[in-house]
Image (cartoon, rainbow, N blue to C red; front, side, top):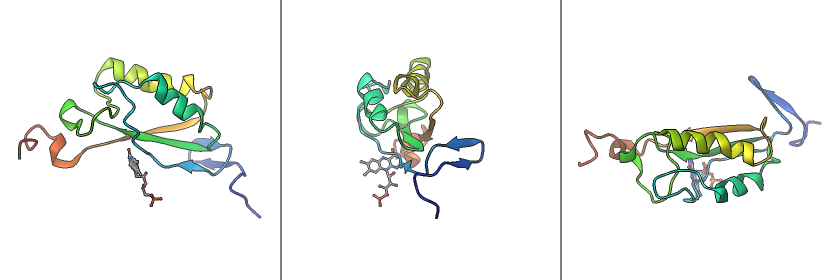
Length: 113
Ligand SMILES: Cc1cc2nc3c(=O)[nH]c(=O)nc-3n(C[C@H](O)[C@H](O)[C@H](O)COP(=O)(O)O)c2cc1C
C-alpha cells in the first residue's frame, strides 16, 4: 500500500515523500519584505517535507498589505528568496514560492478605492 512517506514524482519534481506544506505567512520578513535568517531557520526546521510551498510574496510595494510579509520586486528580495532554501540545507528541495496579489489593494490604479 502506498504511504505518505513514499517518494513520488510531481511533474519535473522528484519528491522524497508526499508531505506537502501549505503556504503560511509568518510575518518574519524585514519591514521592506526581505527574507530574514529567522525565516531560513523556520523552513530548515520543516525541510523533511516532500514539498514546501513557501509563504506568499507580494509582487509590488502597494501589495504589502500586512507588516513584514515577504516581497519579490527588487534584487534584495530575489536574493533572499533564492538564498533561503540553500540556507535550510536542502539545495535540491522542492520549494515553491507563491504570489500574493492582495486583490484590488495591490493594484496602483485601485489601491485608493
Ligand atoms: C497563519 C496562516 C498563514 C497563511 N498564509 C498563506 C499564504 O501566505 N499563502 C497562501 O496561499 N495561503 C496561506 N494560508 C492558507 C493555508 O495555506 C491553507 O490553505 C489554509 O489554512 C486552509 O487549510 P486549513 O483548512 O487546513 O487551515 C495561511 C494560513 C494560515 C493559518
